[in-house]
Length: 598
Image (cartoon, rainbow, N blue to C red; front, side, top):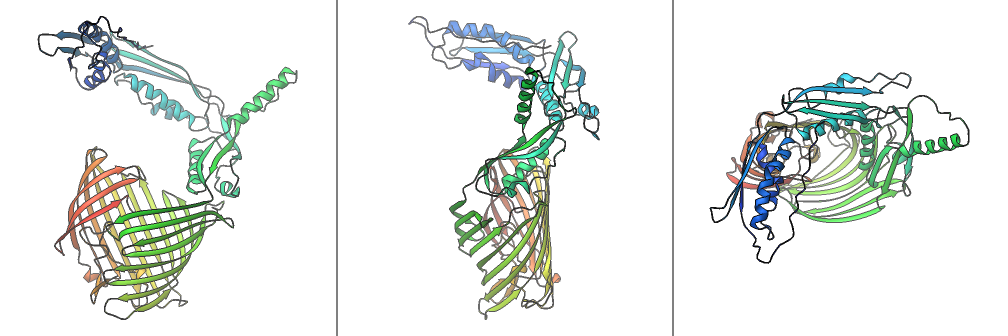
């Protein structure tokens, strides 16, 4: 078994009063990553600049450097290096040099993975598949034997076993036998599965203010299910997303089995035979929560290049007759809104039902709209596949500059689906997101003009290299109705702004009506963006956007915008600052946004 010695070097205390601190430089000549390894770990480097270091102590550091370097280099798989070190005192500032010839690396010659246990105990259990485990082993024959890779391979192997059925698995034997003469390492790992584990009934701790069904309705784990770390984490994520809890921990309750073992030991000490059923262990599912405060208020200030300065007040109450209430007041330069929604606890089938009402006023491009809404909504699914069905009543007053006001009302039903396939939901670099909506007001009930509406938006992230990403965007919409007048402007289309065609103002592209720009029946936009991360999390971007909205397909002539931008991957999502030029208006515009829509 390969063992790496740890050398501890201690400097003696300061000697005579005549000892004088010495300044020196260190030059390391080593290939590849070895240079950085020695630079970060050699005592010769770490003690540089110490005011207590004199010439005699420096010479000792130089003398010990080769042995310390050999120990460090062995962790990278080089067990027969040639290392020399010397001190040049002929210059004003002495130079300590370390020269390394690592030689040929030690390679993995054989991997012996032995499995103990893993018998299926429960009726209907499938035998464990050892081939999958061996195929996923990460340090294979012919690869350089690095200590870090060896430790990571063992951790990954154990992790794979513990994730399902066998959370008590252990590495009972590991060895790496290194032969520097033939440059081969023979690896052996023995894994003991421990008992097979099944999940049992639900136990809840910490719940005081809110009804138990908030938790039980979200539990998709049935007693007798195989232990699955992924299932426990998914349950935990669903509970965290409810907003009722500040902390949530979902785990298999190993303490329950420990209590049983103690009772069994007491029985044995009293002479009673231990009667334990044969088969897998059954662990209760333990949910520990810390509840959020029932009421919460917050205020915020902000700015958007789309809608201007913003002031916002939020008030939430987690238990209004058993429902969760969320409300907000928003005052922006171009938009003012007030809304309150009430959410039922998630049902056992995973449905999230809510109802609410709101009022919104928009003053954009010479068009002023005042919209009052009352809505009921059902949503379901996961962050990877979300679906919703919304039934609402809208009453709108529209005022176009230079024209009389128009009133309209509508009773539409809208189905929406969003599919995400991303490597990261907050900071994506690979994958896609697509949203599609289909709805309309088809019955002549509380509706001035019947219509059907379809809309879709697509974003695709494509890595070009380790440091660069290509982002493709597309957006399309269409409205079918006998007459456009009478359809609330909420269901019409406009383009332009941070999340649309950059280089143009917010909803600047649409149908000209007098001195105003209003929504059209059709929408088509697209964009291509290239991002280069020159010093992550910092990056730059170049992009081209195009699109428009119109009342006729023949009038959908694209308007182009193009520019450059700065990027920062912040913890809350990407922060984008773009300078874009609108070709049609021959003006440049600054855009600022956080995160990405969806």
